Image (cartoon, rainbow, N blue to C red; front, side, top):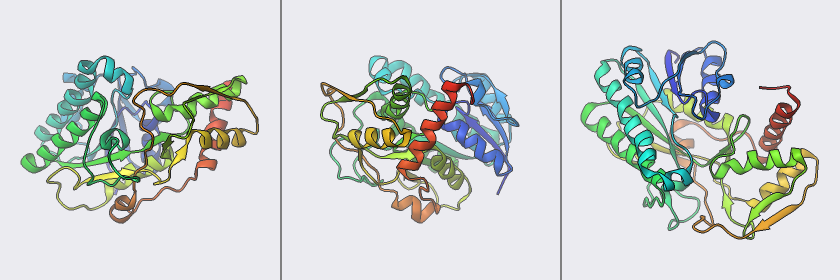
Length: 321
């Protein structure tokens, strides 16, 4: 299946990978991004571009009149720490901005599947077994996680009451080329830049805290699968929610060692005190996505870190944008 696709946040890290893949698959792609964190150079050749906020009337008009077959909604405020310091701004973007787009889909009169980029670790919280599965209790501990879960509930409402076709993808820690050093997964970008400068890699606490790192190209493939696969009706949260991760825990120490090995250099580690409130462990089960979407990650951590480091090295040399 191909058709018309709108990618909100398509100038950003993950969104640009989604847009690249859609174009390769023959989609007519348009991007909606205010460039607050996205980069114009990330917009792939061949994609239309609308520079505007997702909460604006202009963005609603683009969705309403665009006759899109699928809306990939990745635009968001992604920094957990910013959500803590300014929860009102986080909710304005992540909740109200999303509702603005959902209302435009509802009133457009054109069947559009909405594929929403949610979060794994920030929704499940501390008190679940690892790897987390979709139906486990939700215990978000930040305004960012609360906003993502709220949007999933709104999507269930729009599906149940207004018959809007919705899917939520709960990402683990996404890394890869074009990554900005934001959020927990941003440690990969931070480490790459420090290695290139010959600086020590900062590790908080003992470095044994774990995360589930999934490559951006694999996440793009998950978005494509979520747009095209036939699914049962969406009636409540979790019915059409899918964890997108590897199911494998990687400690910060293991991440640092694997990245240093991929880069072929050795820089020291600098240990600092543990950060208060940091999750000790996080990983998500991908069994539901494998069974229902036909998706599984293809890129292992060592290969993915190697490709990511080469991207940052190329940027430092001026070889890549």
